[in-house]
Length: 186
Figure 1: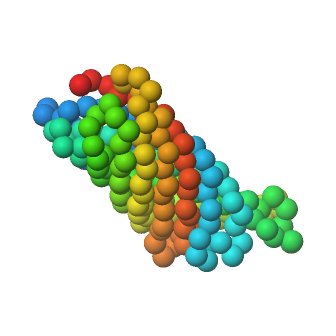
Figure 2: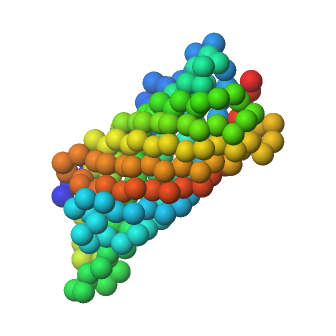
């Protein structure tokens, strides 16, 4: 299959996402985050993919002082396959999404949060001795977690997220991630 998005198209898509979610002058804070953890395939993807790993990172721009944030999220991960005929079979999953996040409670305290997003995801199947197959499609995610402050501008967080994709890329995973968040400005 032919990929809908090449490397340069991904860079353009991320740049556009950043422009769409750029903060207004009245935004409260900007938060950068990075996380990693395990992925658990679901749906049809679970029939051949094993538990894998995922890394995620992004930026959130606070909207006023309400706990609402908008931002952009990037994901990259991999799941190996149980395939008796192909060696080193794996699927690499990547996505770029615009997200909306809401954190409950007061800043500086332990805060639960929820988020959702939409954008594009790609997946590339590869195995030794077989030509790679890459495709991309619409994707979405829903998640929730808890943020634990460890300093004035830094926090640890734990989250769970579900990532699903459209018709061309039927890759669905549940992810359990741990990460760091760094707040800029104020």
